[in-house]
Amino acid sequence: MYAESLDLSVGASQAQASLAGLACDPAHSRGRRHPEPPAPTRNAYQRDRDRIVHSTAFRRLVYKTQVFLNHEGDLFRTRLTHSLEVAQLGRSIARALGLNEDLVEAVALAHDLGHTPFGHAGQDALNDCMAGHGGFEHNLQSLRVVDQLEERYPAFDGLNLSFETREGVLKHCSRANAERLELTEPGGVGRRFIERSQPSLEAQLCNLADAIAYNAHDIDDGVRSGLISTDQLLQVELFAHYHQQTLAEHPGLTDKPRRLLYETIRRMLSDQVYDVIDTTRQAVAQAGVRTLAQARQAGPLVSFSPQMKSRSAELKKFLFAQLYRHPQVMQTTRQAQQVVHELFAAYVAQPAEMPSDFAASDDLHRSVADYIAGMTDRFALREHERLTGRKLL
Ligand code: MG
Image 1 (spheres, rainbow, N blue to C red):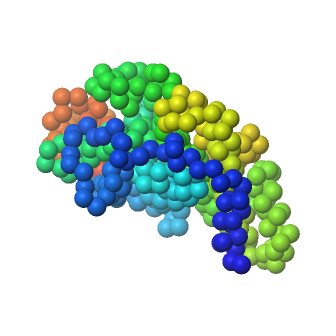
Image 2: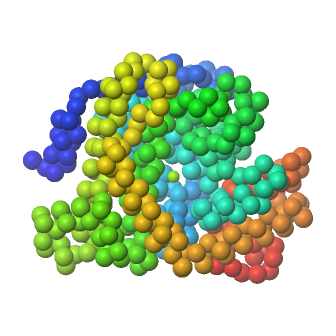
């Protein structure tokens, strides 16, 4: 038997219960903000996914930093490959649980559209720049991209996505921003942050798939970069467990460190996927929910088991301390933040340096933030050099 089919049989044998009754159904979507006739060959969520894939913001993800700056190496993850990995993991889990794969794919592909250049460094800098002007949150920005900033259709701004896709895109939101959203869209995607209810199971799943994806690929990229070593990773229980398991089965891999690393990560990913599938089925059974409306009130249902949760948290903590806060990453971070701060100041002082529709806005600071947030890493660097005459990074 092939290993692939063996893996599938493990997942399938654990429990057959489908959660299809709790899945979002495109035929019963809460609809789009601007009503449109249905597409003849695609359901609402498939159409959303297609709109996302064809958007300008999606193509820019290929030149945006995940952890390593885009120009630091060709093999590191970018926001685009990260988003594809989240979609792959999300769809696998959704299929096993009977949730809506198309919706999961749409949310996963859109979840990072609002990310600034230079990853979290860029977002923190932009948030500083926007203090006193409403701040900057990348999740809210992803929603702004799909609701307002994309310009593709004659009759409306944005991509006019279904409610359920937009709900999934807005994975976190401050109370203040939720109240602002509620003013423009009463009972809309901001409401759950005020009521403290849950989004669809597909949206919950995308959050978890995001964390599973970056924990795994940041190990790979971290080792590839030389900033973290396998020896350091062996302090982390989740990694050490699968590393030992792999070596016990394939002792020859001691001479093939990349294959050993990939196999360790592959096993880690598979077991996290099975863990989410089992734990979610149990949580739904325990909560006794029978409808999506009940599931939204039941607290988070898509989750890791307590043991996997603590192992995953340990890994995340390790990556934070050893990789994201590595002196070499921190130095890049500081320079990236300087680029964003100086770009922001330059455009506020001279709005005409931006394209005319950004320059003409009646909320200049928000408009500058939108313009900078949309930039790729390399475009931001070029603009910075053009406006300041100095070259950073
Ligand atoms: Mg992400």
